[in-house]
Image (cartoon, rainbow, N blue to C red; front, side):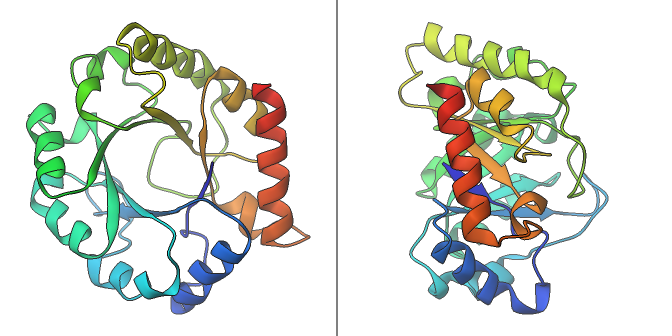
Length: 222
């Protein structure tokens, strides 16, 4: 699945960008929510996301790169996000946070920064439908892919298999995903691919970029 980040889009035309991505054949839209504290940048509030919700029927997911996910969760669900991704590093009581998201009626997911081991989420795999392995340090678009995260993706896949949840929980990767990196991530076990710069800067447009990434990932997983 191709999950574009709208971070590289023209912020004055976000609704148009969402619609263009939908027409290009993506599977969902990811919103990179940054609070200026957990990560340096400050991005999308819930009202901004809600203003684009009527531009597509595709699912929205919010990647909450924030220190206070419990305080923010309800607002992003009300804005139209059907999945919330929280960082294992950003909450003291991760089990409770994921449970709170489920109580709001959204799917709960957990993200791991590059330095965080998969063992940090070993005891919450029953509460999530997606694990995000960051392939850059979060906070900025356009960063270089960290290839040494591929063994970590495999480790997460092995954990899910051991827990009997490999067919139920997606593995997402985010950071530096492009034509020259997507095969490694997909071959390691990722099946949800977040891409931003590689889509918006493709010389042949969004549709060609989406098709290229999907084709390369599918071949790598064959």
